[in-house]
Length: 288
Image (tube, rainbow, N blue to C red; front, side, top):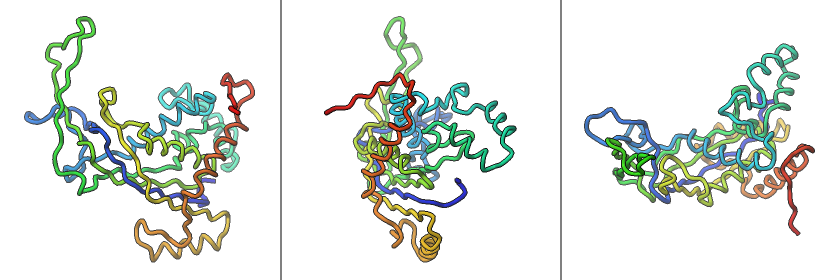
């Protein structure tokens, strides 16, 4: 169950802006300044919310899973398309008076993407910290860009629709740190595929993507993996190591998670193949 510690994967690295990045804080109310400032931390430095990174990653993986079978990834924006609606959840709670049986039934009915990223009825296994700027890659300045709304009828600039917005310059780096706990091997494989999309500049962030903004590149430096495998002694040793460790330090109990990427990815392929509904409209092709 989720309240029993089984494993933990810590991921750390750098996210670099390949093109300018625009993550807006909303329209400014200041009389002087840009119309659309970027999101900043308390010190006025640029910030990428962990939720923005996680949301972009989830969206890409949802599209992959739906391409295989629509049941693998429910639509989080429309409740009627959830794998478990609010009404269905009430019915499940009325049916199962045993918490363990209820939890097992919820997990069985939950779509694959929600098992990893969470939903209104199940906690996320994957957490991403807000990405803070690397000081020596940002020199305290933002770029200003101009924008204009287009009148769809005349295909010319609409009256009074000229605006400007801030962007974070290309070449700025952000600290990336994420954790996933109690994940199955196939879920780790799904995560590896998603992170690889960021490593190969396939997932843009923020607004203005049609303008070429938001292209980023993730470089993963560390992947610390711990699997206690129902071994109490191994867990006790890990807890002892935690007491005397520093943040981000590689503990003796940790393994190099990068060595397991291929195994996790293959586990995902196997899991999806075995769980593909027989009446699926998606056709799989095998290349020789």
